[in-house]
Amino acid sequence: DSGVTQTPKHLITATGQRVTLRCSPRSGDLSVYWYQQSLDQGLQFLIQYYNGEERAKGNILERFSAQQFPDLHSELNLSSLELGDSALYFCASSSLSGQNSGNTIYFGEGSWLTVV
Amino acid sequence: AQSVAQPEDQVNVAEGNPLTVKCTYSVSGNPYLFWYVQYPNRGLQFLLKYITGDNLVKGSYGFEAEFNKSQTSFHLKKPSALVSDSALYFCAVRDRNYGGSQGNLIFGKGTKLSVKP
Image (cartoon, rainbow over all chains, first blue to last red; front, side, top):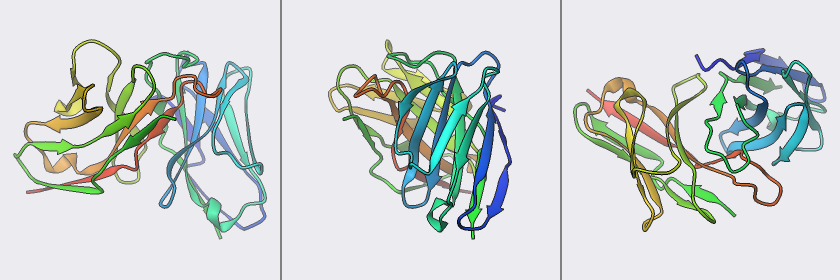
């Protein structure tokens, strides 16, 4: 158990809908990362937050957004869903901002999103 | 830009034999390198990392990896494979404050390890 908790584990929704994925980082970790894993794109970095502020942005679509709350949990919001958004979405956390550091990033079990 | 390559989509090994999963990287400056494992329907589990120091890094479940700067490689190894090692293995490099991005991991495409009894 990595200590990173994600909910829901599985989610099935229709095209055009909006969903929210939730993540609780490991105790004491200030950085939260979101990744998308799909068969064709592999593991893609979406976005990173550090202590409530956006720190880095990767291949995140404009239809997607995220935030980190004062209690450090994070939410990834996916809207106007398309079939191609079906994927496994990982949250991960680490103890530092990650800038030029070698600290380990720990991953949750992921949220399986199926868009039908 | 930093990148990671895992040249093999799949590696097949007999139980008890040594295994190697290959990884090469391209970074500017000194690399931070990681290996993760993903079992079916599970999340990514951290195995080991290279930050600095000894080129041979030991990690979880008897795995180790050898950092080779001249060959820009970070191959994952285990002296004696187990059937339970069958999983998807990912090599990753830390994105080091490049173009505004700070610290996220850049992953290879993954290598499926199959260990047969």
